[in-house]
Length: 311
Image 1 (cartoon, rainbow, N blue to C red):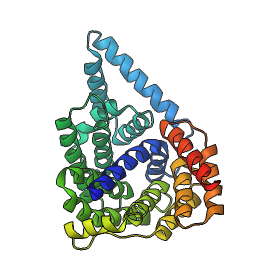
Image 2 (image 1 turned 90 degrees about the vertical axis):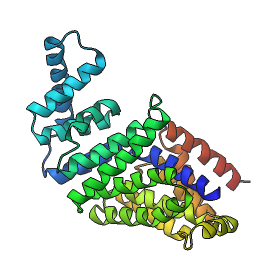
Image 3 (image 1 turned 120 degrees about the horizontal axis):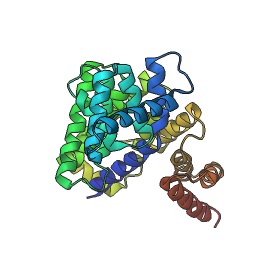
Image 4 (image 1 turned 120 degrees about the vertical axis):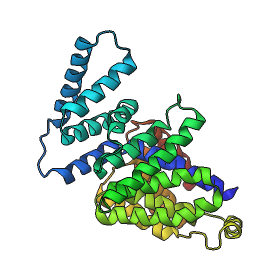
């Protein structure tokens, strides 16, 4: 049960992390594809999408909203080169248009291009978080996302994003496979996160998730470790020092990029009994602009922890 709770907590954490890091991932993957990019690209993509939508409305004025989205996606796929489709996909992702994005990318499910496949894995996974998705459909999409991520790796082992999303999707599937499989996959998950970081040392998200992986296993109580040892002969282990190194590295790569990273730095220093540094980072987490719902939760938790430290 303890291991299951840990797995569920890790999944919730990853769900929140990847949602708040949309724009940074899109920016980095675009830098890999092109060396020079106009600062007005996003507005151009938005304009293109609006124009495509207007064309569909003129030609098919009676289409339902859902059918119109499908028609726009088909129009883009037929008339636009791959690069434009990828740019459109990144724009929709940055806007949180999950359904539109999936409809656009699923038409490329048989592509030999890893750039399409890992994005499709991500889009399929994002669909599982929608309230309108049934439990059965969520399970199907979870396995579908892993399949696309696996195909992306087969097409391009050197894609950092393919490694990252394979790790995340493999963790998701573990929730349906049982605790033993989940623990066994933990090693694979860590290996792929490390490979993602090796390929893209500037991806603060992968570094942060790996830090959280270490923190989660470092805080297992002795009785939880015994339970894990019964289920799996050699359960994963980690230390707070390892977690701290990753959180600090993420901050070095992209300073102040994520409120949760500030909070985890404070919590890790607390576990290492360094009150001064814990107070420093928890204060930064408390003062971080609360833009998202998670930022507000981080603010609340940081306040509570600071109160404990000041007692």
